[in-house]
Amino acid sequence: MIGWRARRLSAAALVLLLLSACRGAAPSAPPAAPAFVPVSAEDQLSAMHRGMNVLDEDPLWDDPAAALFQPRHFARLRDAGFDTVRINLHPFVHSDASGQIDPTWLATLDGLVKAALDDGLTVILDEHDDSLCERDVAACGPRLRAVWEQLAGRYRHAPNRLLFEILNEPHDRLTAAVWNDMLRDLLATVRATNPQRNVVIGPAGWNAVDQLKTLDLPADDPHIIVTVHYYRPVRFTHQGARWVAETANLSGITWGTDAEMAQLVKDFDAVRAWADAQHRPMLLGEFGAYDKADMASRVRYISAVARVAEAHGFPWAYWQFDSDFTAYDIRRDDWVRPILQALVPP
Ligand code: BGC
Image (cartoon, rainbow, N blue to C red; front, side):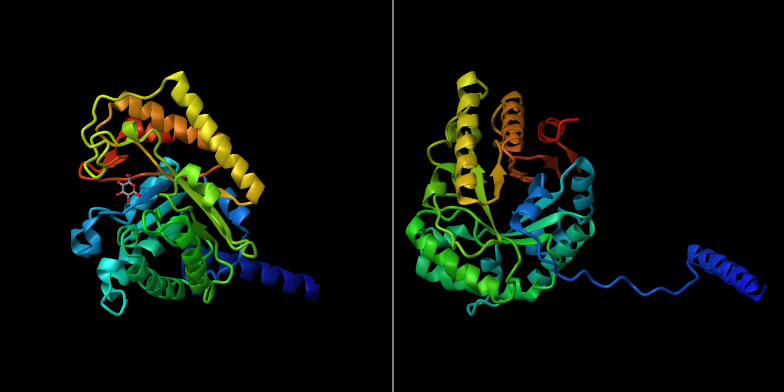
């Protein structure tokens, strides 16, 4: 009897507890911050499918009050079917002569990283300062090291959905030989505080697919995801782009012949073969077509590259959310629907 009463009482207490918890009356401790849990590069990659390059040129880096991109855009991306963002960073112009990064810039980044992770996205911190490195390796090397000492240290306890990409599109003076040395140095800097976080690294020569053969990675580090960028043929994807001398004056170039499609598949077959031979997971970190091409060709191209990448097992990140190659009209605050539908078919 007594046992039954005790059980009945404890059942009643349980009901009361549940009711008060439902009303929010029971005090509860906030969930502990998720500690870093190592994940293999392969498993990390298999949780990534569709990504977006964000924030490259947003005014918020100079003045948070002038932000075009708002934290709610991460949810907008997620709800549209994206699971990854590659945040394009330019810390050099926000660092002092000794390499110390401006605390306001770091606080802005903290807020963005937290918002994106809270929305369930995988976040790649992409060091996008390749333009100093293209002309002055001696100046750029120590500055990159200083950046990674600070960023890697700052985010060492962040969840494993935060990845570091040590440098976007190394090129010119950063020849393959120079880059293969420098990437070891930068990786060692990251590894001092993040021995098992996955790091994204691409080949010299602008991360181009045909440069993979020049990439030499430390064989004893399994926590590397390799990245390539795809803009072939550049005369189509960069027609009218003022920053590419050979294509700045081109216009009216369309894309989508059988031969062009076959070339795309052939290029990605070669990337797959390299990745398999080297046992490295592969991310297509940038691709896209500049706004000056006709919309029908852009849609054909973007959807073809995305589908061919998916068929080869490569998650991808489109270049870029807003500003140019535009997927999202940030002033109208809505998607450029044909581009979104090319990326994420309805
Ligand atoms: C560069 C951008 C450029 C894009 C396409 C990126 O990696 O940083 O400036 O618009 O590639 O050319």
